[in-house]
Amino acid sequence: MGTGNEEQGFTPLKLKIMQLLTSKAVRAIAIIALMVLALLGLVQLPSASFDHLWYNNSFCSSTPSHSLSPSTPSTPSRDNLQPDELNGIDWSRFAYVQYVTNTEYLCNSVMLFEILHRLGSKADRLMMHPSSFAVDGASTEESRLLRRARDKYGVKLKPIEIQRKATSDPTWAESYTKLLAFNQTQYDRVLSLDSDSTVLQTMDELFLAPSALVAMPRAYWLNFDDRILSAQLILIEPSEYEFNRVMNALNAAKSNDYDMEIVNNLYKDSCLILPHRPYNLLTGEFRSDKHSDYLGNSEEGWDPEKTFKEAKFLHFSDWPVPKPWLSALPSMIQDKQPKCQENPKTGVEDDCRSRDLWLGFYSDFKQRRQARHLRSGNEKTIDGNFGRATGGKAQPI
Ligand SMILES: *[C@@H]1O[C@H](CO)[C@@H](O)[C@H](O)[C@H]1NC(C)=O
Ligand SMILES: CC(=O)N[C@H]1CO[C@H](CO)[C@@H](O)[C@@H]1O
Image 1 (cartoon, rainbow, N blue to C red):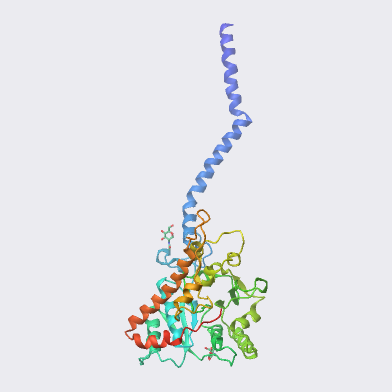
Image 2: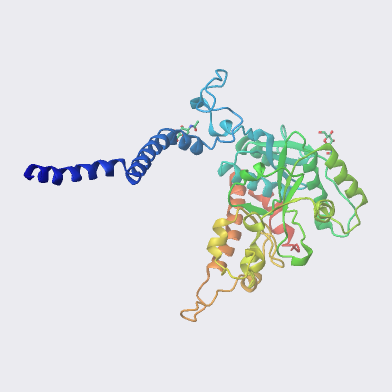
């Protein structure tokens, strides 16, 4: 019985282990463990190549990639392709475009193209200038600036006829010329920028926005309920058909309907709305005490530095302060510059960030313009053309 006892003592234990090993729970655990191992193996191997594709952002590439379709021998080696080529983006189909009607705006336009060049923007740069401006073989101020734009900043020059109408306000009489951007059908898409502005960051990504004949931001500073579109920045798909529509609207326009009214009438219900934040900031925002229209909500506090950092396109608009290439009286600046804000902790009005940024916008513009004067070696002429001679005429927004 002793052995029997022993055996009896041993056997149940062995049996228990056997039973345990074959029990549902252990089988289930084993299966799960195997599955986890298998999954880890499966996930690990391809993950590197997915990362690779994702990093190169070529998931939606029109160019087939190695790992997805290895049997395309005619495709150039992926190592020889730039990321943009992998994405199938041909930036020469797109252009930043500006129109110029006089020497003063020519200088502004060259300054803006200089920024786009300096920031390394990828799309073409196209300047529509009066055909009366000679480019080569002349030593006029205009030809010097046009050659600088072409040779230093890679700007393509397009001679055009200024579009005028006998309108009531001469400030805008030539602004119809902007609408010639609709006629630049050598491009799939153009981004028209007003030149009384500063580009703070490139806007190449706008050319890849969903297709729309016209895309514009709102004039957020105007009456909110009117939902007016701002023509300071217009993304256009040029076409003969749309150009004819625009020209017909121009010919039929009333004397106080300018480029902005024309594009609003034609596209207010069909255009793609671009966020005015960050694509259309006014310098005047830094003087305002109400920021909810720009911010798009009333909860967010005004942070001038954050606004400046996120903005891509800054338009000079501070009526009655004159545009930055005209000289304002020091008393005007003193009077109209942004007020320093009260620091809630100390009660002292020592938060002057809005004012410092605002003064910086103007001095930056002046300095860049000045630098251009000095480099021209022809300071007197330019000063006569651009500077004090214009008498600081202010333009309303
Ligand atoms: C529009 O473009 C066409 C083709 O380039 C050109 O012949 C025509 O003169 C342009 N129209 C205007 C008003 O610039
Ligand atoms: C063509 C290209 O840009 N290839 C890059 C894809 O991403 C890897 C890094 O994940 C780079 O090493 C390649 O140069």
